[in-house]
Length: 371
Ligand SMILES: Cc1cc2nc3c(=O)[nH]c(=O)nc-3n(C[C@H](O)[C@H](O)[C@H](O)COP(=O)(O)OP(=O)(O)OC[C@H]3O[C@@H](n4cnc5c(N)ncnc54)[C@H](O)[C@@H]3O)c2cc1C
Image 1 (cartoon, rainbow, N blue to C red):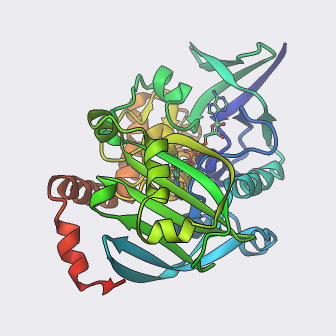
Image 2: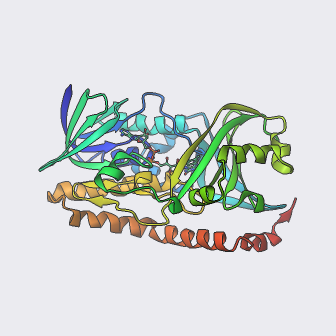
Image 3: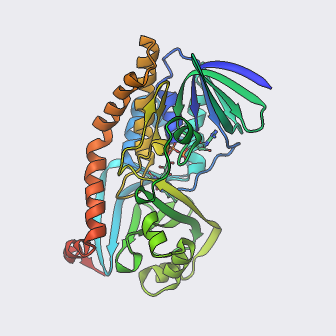
């Protein structure tokens, strides 16, 4: 067994974990970033990289424009079309946003971390056990081949991850959780390379269907709904997805000649519509591990990057003061509240109002363009 010691262990090499590591580039701390997946790492996602993610990455990575510019497999998104029953509302975006398969986006972020001299990336290393010590933690991989000692943990291991369960004692709450499916397609008609499309309305229940254009003529199409509504109405999400494509109307028309490339895959999204435990003695949680996805859209990459960056600031505060107590970590909770609290609260209220009064969007869309 290999045994190594670090100041900080970051669990998870997704947007939250890599943003945390990149924000600590100049910290002088010895960091282990531990990712269970081998190369190339993928994640079931809509692949829409929101503007706030790009904004923070520009702050963290001075050469972001040059480095991200090297990725060919991305599309710049400038507008969205929101469909509700037979109306459409169009929105133009000022913020720089993209679609990019997570296969490429996450590898890009990891490649930026790889150039940091004091950060070691462990790949294919699934942590299965976390044991507390007086001066930190001991992490062991499930295969027993690697043991890492550290003084602090940044838990960025995604939904239902080990850190959220073991360190914070959190469990998944169906009321604050979306289940979603997605697949890639070729040959979908009427797609614009700079436009994302959203479909909601009576036949989608509380959920929505998306079509995001992906480089190379692909589209990422998916459907997500609140998990408690799925279980109370006994819905099979994969069957519901197929029924939407086979049914009548615009979506059926668009997908009539399309070919599915790869499987229809499902995953959960933990919403920031409640506040689980996000920190404690010697640890902070970020991204999906801290349940921070937008309650209205389910988008989580932006908040994962914002919280990964905030986690790094907390790590620096702890190492500077030598204080790793749960009381000190409250500064992190407060920072998250300042940065994300207002938007999460606002969108939680909208989400709850819409599920109670589903006719409201119908009224709003009376002014949309008829299709
Ligand atoms: C179907 C679907 C569509 C979505 N579409 C969008 C979208 O279009 N735009 C958007 O902004 N958000 C979207 N989201 C949400 C988004 O994918 C997440 O919010 C985002 O990936 C969170 O980033 P993260 O770094 O916190 O977690 P993750 O990206 O999940 O990264 C966690 C990492 O930790 C690793 N890991 C887990 N356990 C261990 C362990 N024990 N040891 C070592 N490593 C471990 C995992 O392999 C993973 O790489 C979607 C989600 C789903 C399910």
